[in-house]
Length: 239
Image (cartoon, rainbow, N blue to C red; front, side, top):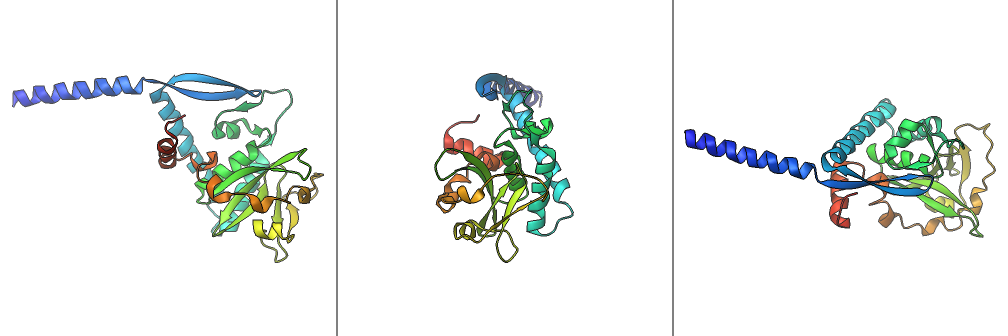
């Protein structure tokens, strides 16, 4: 009996010593400040803890936002409204920071595509495939970022930055196919808000978006542990 205890303690000691060494392996994370990206070394255990902290915060916040919304369209509009209300335009005097989606939420402001980054992440946590995409205008001089969300077998377009979404003649969300066919009208969360964007100038090639291949490993789709693990296997590493 004593020999078994000694063997067990020895094995446990070896296991926990190995675990300690593995969890203290140096890994990297990236942070962009004013469009300059830095690679920062952190121990593996801290990266894991930070990842799960963000994951559970996403789940908790999304559940709060949609808890009283049984219909799919109502859930999406609740998330869309929350992002438009809480993620403000990037203040000019503050640095532009690009690292994790959760940090955009904590800061409460975002630059360019960051409101779409938050919205599409929320949608994925609510059970909807979603990703964001930069659309160019006809003469390729400007781009806007739109979010695409899948409801059943159709993809629908939103622009969280300005609170714009698009409906068809039947009053429902306009799908990519309907927008491409010209069956759409713009609606805004705040109808009195002013935005001069000519969306028709950006929708000429919207039907060419390869949604099947883009959304699978988009950033918004790999925030949960299982999907991040699959992504790491597919891409040959974790960041």
